[in-house]
Image 1 (tube, rainbow over the protein chains, first blue to last red):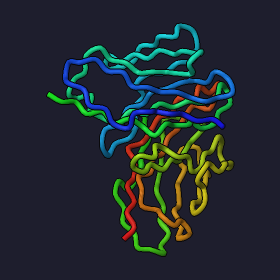
Image 2 (cartoon, rainbow over the protein chains, first blue to last red):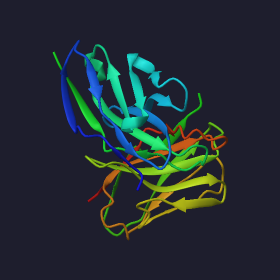
Image 3 (spheres, rainbow over the protein chains, first blue to last red):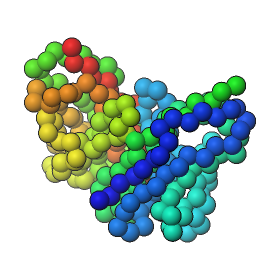
Length: 114
Length: 114
């Protein structure tokens, strides 16, 4: 079955420290991969996406993610976290070219301490 | 500006009542989606539509209904058959052509059953 696993429900990071949010997926083939961010009571905003090519992708707000086919992972990273990064982060996967809906992980809540 | 508009943002209903959530987009997207979000559960797909006058059930369609009479609009009705309707509902759209799966989200509607 197709699924996305975000192992960490809640992570707390000190402001200025580095961040890595984990995402593993189970899929029949290499899917399209996404990271979204959600502030409380808001919709989701796309941070970055991987379709093909370079396995290290850059996104908005200084985030990057690396696709590792051998590990079925797509971890999100940021070298220095800002207090405004506190939010909920969702990893999602989707089929290539089929036009069906994305499958989302359960999310990781990021808290930033000063 | 192009985007997705969901209304109302907050809605209260009594048990046994049907309620309709509105979703309108001016992005000229072919595909539209409804997701339900509960704390710690991530996003779960209710219904999606890839083209006008056609829609498919998602993972949790029971107790919900949709229509897609216009490209711009994809309303969701939460019926009295939905046993636990209190949740945050998110509408999204995607291009549907050479679909890369990237979703654009509205700001959400929070439904509370009293």
